[in-house]
Length: 504
Image (cartoon, rainbow, N blue to C red; front, side, top):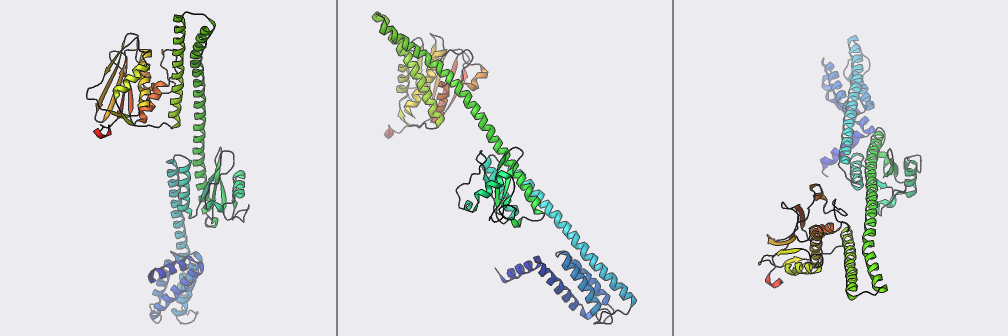
């Protein structure tokens, strides 16, 4: 800090102190009187009164009322003692000088008082404008927040900026108990006092009637419906006088914002619980139905084999029924496991280079029984390169798509599989000649448990939802649309590089 800055800082500190203002008033009036002393022995001593009035007016622009009154009185006495004949006495010979002195004294006092009052009103107006702007800024920032954490961050920042104190906002846990996060800063917080303030919705701590020995002051945050928590601040003595109402308004705004976010979270939890309950009931009912059919088939066929003497042909037919029911049961379990992997986020993609012919042939072999009544057309370009995919996951994707077509396309129709590689993207299409989807249903095809009107009985409505999740896990996308000539087309696109020879 330079010498000039030190002097400037010292002068500012002197002005801001009460004693300093009295000293400055005396010094300035004394210096002014000394500088005007050459006019004492002339007929222009009346000019000194105007100079002193100007000085008093100047002092009243930055000093309090009492230092200004002192300056007005001193200026009148100094003009009388040093400038009005006879000099160096308070006696005034001329009547006109007595009148002028009296008017000077009254004008000096009124001028100082009125100027001080105007300045004070101006300061009040400026301070009100600042506070209005601060409240507007707080409301604006809080309105842009999304979530309790953002509200807390904005609130702490605005309090620090407008009150020069370090606030700590502590929220409740939903059971009327405050939660103190682990922090060095929070070691100074007295939990019992904070909890008392929260429970009784009264301020407590330093500079209050309750628990005054605390280092911090605690202010409850409560809205019209719920209590959110408390604000703890140190140096509450900084917030005094007319700042208290300003602080109270700040606390109300923050309380309302926190209440809003807490109520939104509570509403979301209620909606989530309702949705979970609905999905649970749907899933339970569907699983109960889906499990009952294959289990009943297996039990019935097994009982017939055990307790009846049937021909080999009948036994073979019963074994086929058991096998078919087992496949259906296994498919149900696989879908449940897959949707669980997707929902939990534990799906792990292991990419490697594979031949698309191997993928399609394996799926068609697995679905040989379901596809026995259909004509399958597979179009794979001769120049089709190896593709980088998770073979097991893509096998499930293709399996679900082709199986879905076999369930809705009429027997004897064509199920077509087209593949293409373009611009480092692997594209596969599955087309059938089934009834297709209603336009209103197209946007819901990939939703969990969705089943279009008129769907065949059986299934949980998870297959296509799993397809979408697995494709997106490959950073790809899938679309569905109705064919102009009938049926539906699924087209999935997955990014894949062209393999180098050494990587094969």
